[in-house]
Image 1: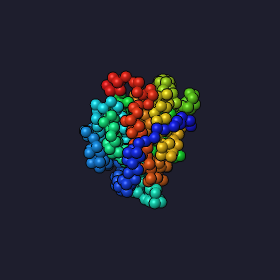
Image 2: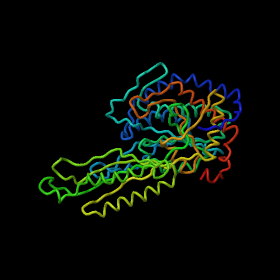
Image 3: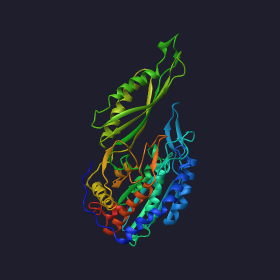
Image 4: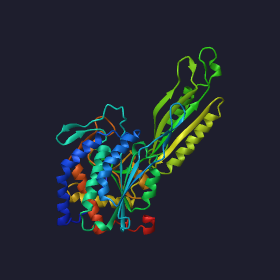
Length: 426
């Protein structure tokens, strides 16, 4: 937990009035949330993602100078038949406002959820008068509405002309942003700070340092044979996959914070045939950026050794899509700014390290300091128990609005303001 708390600068009377006015929008935001959540927008449902984007386009376009709908390249992945598939993705929406302003802020949200089209969890239900259960309500359709309220308030501030902003709503964050990662990187170098609207941690605090993540698929090709008559002529792909998996299990904690999890495996057709194909998928989490190269070297050595054995062909697909996000002094100065805003609202904001990843990792890797859990309060995300605390639609918008007001009035935090303008705007 952090300890960086300093006396906040008191907001002006106008600023206090503006943030209080946000409560008037609460009923509308709740209704919009219900309508958004009941559109299935699984990462693998581009039609639903695009419906979600179109719904939001009507809300964000009036705030922006320019709205762009961008088609992304398909997501290439290896299926359990050993074939390389190209999965179509939904579109990405990019909004821009005041690109020539002296301070440029990148805001990010994602349109996709983890709940497939055939999931039984599709609808909103009210748990209490202030709590809803619904797919993607907290992660992160509620967060997108927080962005909407905060930007709406910024446009009413007398110093709004000092801040230019870009909003990216991407369709593939829940699968690691494979199609949108290049755009995230391209936009990161044009801005001074990033604000990402993942839900807060369950205790309503922020994620600080984040581990990096790599997703991999291994296809083991052997040789089929009759299991009874001539098993010696076969090369059992499942057995070879098991050997590789045992070797992979040894990766755990060979480097501080490194963990490896095998999440899926499939192979074989019947018990009287030596299986000639086994495919498994695994994830690696790392705490240090240099561990990505270390892991890749180890994996390459393991696959090379397996391919030297007669009758086997082993291939590895995937890589580290997200490097660790580390809390350097520049990040900490931004978090401190947010703390000061929270104190005015009678709140204390802290942060802690997490093994989870998000687009904040991508922005950090591109050199953009960011806070990546500015969304709503909720819990049990990625499960059928996912909930959102409805008052946080307004509470979190107030916090973001105060942060934007503070930056407009006082400029960027220490360290960030010293970045050369050509680096921040190129």
